[in-house]
Length: 407
Image (cartoon, rainbow, N blue to C red; front, top):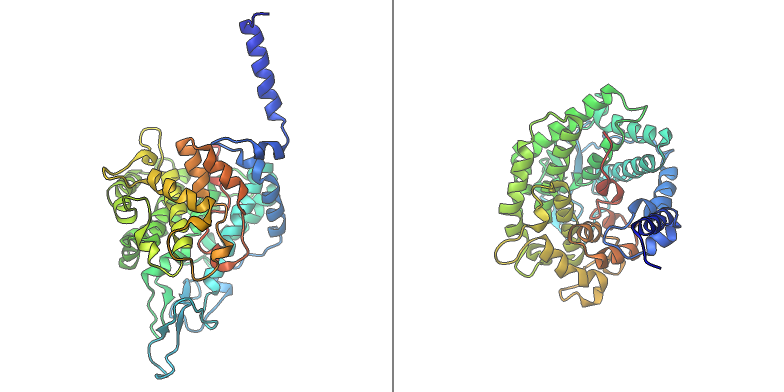
C-alpha cells in the first residue's frame, strides 16, 4: 500500500507524540547531541532542592574574621597553601604546594560555594515545577548576599587570597567568585516568581553591575584577566555572565561591553590559552594538570555558550594554526573518556575522583552536533562532595545554561 502524505504525517505525529511520553530512563539512554537535560536531571535537581529548602542564608556578615582589614561585608580569604615561617615569628608565610593550612581562613569562600550550589538547585527546581517555595528560598539567599544593605557583600575582592602577614588581596582571589557565574544564570529564571520584588530587581541589577565594573576597572582584577590559564578564563566567564545578567534584567542596556568581550575571546583568549594541539599549556605545569585542564575547558565552553548569537558563533571561531574550542574539546574528549590515556603527569590530589560530568561535553555536543560527547556526559558523576573538586566545578546545573528564560 503506497504511503500518502496524510498517512506519513499521521505516523510521524504518532512517533513525536509517543516520544513526549517516554519514561525519563529511556530519554536518558537515547543517543543524541541535544539530550533532554530536564528529564535527565529531574530527580537529581528536586532531591537536592528539597534538601536546600531549610538552609538559612549565610552572608559574609555571619562569618567574621578578626584578621580581615575590611568591613564585615568585605569578602576575605587566605591562601590555603601558605604556612608560617618557623624561623621568623612575624615573617612572611611560606608556600607548601599541595599542603593545606588548616588555620587559613576560607569561610567566606566556602559560604559563596554553598550559595551557588543552593541557589542554582533551587532555581532549577522552580524552572521544572513552578512551585513558589523553591523560588522563595532562592530569593532569600540572594537578598541576604546582594540586596540587603546590612548584609550584602561589597562588590569587590580587595582582600581575597591574602598571604599573611600582608593584608592586601591577590589576583588569584578572583577565582573565589567564579561560582557567581551560575548564580547569575539562575536569577533570570526567578524574576517572574511571586516572591521576586522590584527591590530585588533593583538590588541585584545594582550589585552585579557594580561587580562587573570592578572586574573591568580594578588593577587586581586586571592581573587575573591577563593570566594565560584558568585564572584568565575565570575572569572572562564572570565578566560575560554578569554582563548577560545586566542585559536580561535591563533589556535596554548598552550591549557594547558584550561585543568587547566577544572580541577579546577571539583576539586574546584563544591565542593565550590554547596551543595548536588543543591543550592548555599553562595549566599543564600545575600540580593538578588534569583537573585544571578540565576546569578551563568547562569555563571556556561556558564562555562560548554565553557569547553565542545566531549572527556570531564563537563556537566556530578558530585561529589559522588551529586553536579554538573545537580543537580543545576534540583533544580532551579521549582523556575524559579514558583517563588512563592522559599523557601528562597525574594530579597531586584527587586524580582518581575525576572526571565528573563536565558541562563542556554537553555544551560542545550541542554546538558541534557530536552525540558521542553527550553520551559520555550522561555516564559521568554529576556531583561531588569533595570541596577541593567542587571549587573547580562551578557549573552544576546545566539546565540553567541550555534553557532560555521566559520573558
